[in-house]
Image (tube, rainbow, N blue to C red; front, top):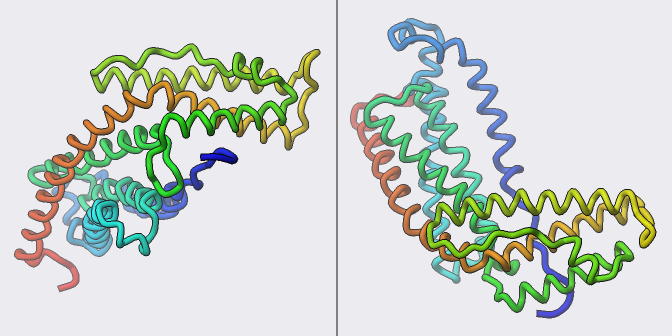
Length: 297
């Protein structure tokens, strides 16, 4: 790979999650006077036909949660079959997959009226485990360097990107490359443990250490010294952006083998959670349909 370092497209997740999340929050704020009541008082409340699990809002959010849950299973299909490339890239599919996974627990809680007992409670717990494991998966996924099409990069490719970045940063700051490398050195841990929890802990610790290095560089660039003058706002923002990317690449090289190892284990663990949640949700929907406990028929 030659030329400038590649950057991953900006994440769609916030744009996909925040608007519906705000709408759901407003609905729940309006229904709070209903949700705080004991079960025996809810049935006589004027909002029961709206916010109960079989009410208009309650069941509508449940239907939407079920539809999104089924949609989640399209992502592994897209990832498996390359002829589906016309539907969008795998990284973009992952963004939508994550957004749907984050919305489902909130929709499910609204559908259940924030009461989790019996089979519903077990199904919701499985759904939460899927969402939580999905967050961990995303955390690991972004630490494995990839091209724009989602393919993993080799260590040589990563190092080449890092060399490009440090050269650009040197030009942007008027600081020589050797000094920049010294300024961006992180007191890193050794990712040698085979324990996945230890690896995740070290990844988080490394995140904080990189944050301290970045803040130190930020202070030096703002203040300037005998060797370099303070940067104007535009050059400062560009320099900090390059520094973040360089620190991220350095971290990815240090932790690459360990991250890949934990990510493979995560794949093994994530699927049983997802299948358990799917079975519980399908069972719940089947019971509701058989009993006719709906507002639309």
